[in-house]
Image 1: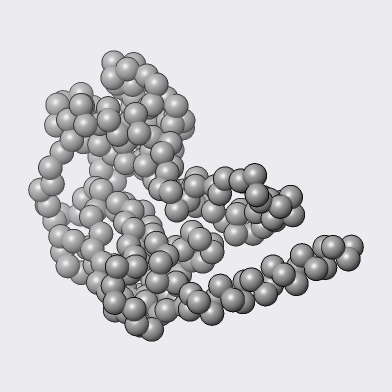
Image 2: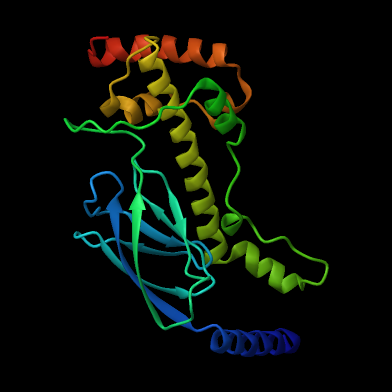
Length: 239
């Protein structure tokens, strides 16, 4: 017990010293749609290092504290996840940034022409499924790490939050591949999934990441065509 208390005191002292050398900064900014230049709302600014999440204000602005070296992620359903950092900027206590998000699909009457992916690029994306940014990767336990430090890393709320964020990144990328496939099928008259049904159809199929990663284009297409025939009858969609 005595050794544990000494360890806690040393850990606390080291943490305070590290915090003094790496003070928190304030990052303020706004998130915009890259095509319409309109401010977006409901996006989440996430710092995976500390498990901190900040939700955008209704006007698309945000304010979050972080260390200058931290990498932050922006999540918003229907948009490509972006990452940003001010690590390369001149050190100052406050930063103002404007970030632009690229929509993965287009809803409503506004038509925005975006380059579509072919099967070759989609296959590369399929093969990359499961990969996660290094900021979300679990810390490796070195030979010099004490058992108490290793145990803390495994059970801490920060570690659990990182795990949830890793899962969110993987799911985000899985859906991106499905979106690209649906676009390809529409353009090539295979099946016509309405854009506002993309997510509902993905949920209906409930196909795991491994299905996309390890099957052939033919197997994937056949399965999705069969599933869509059932889905379209269930929902009353006219193909």
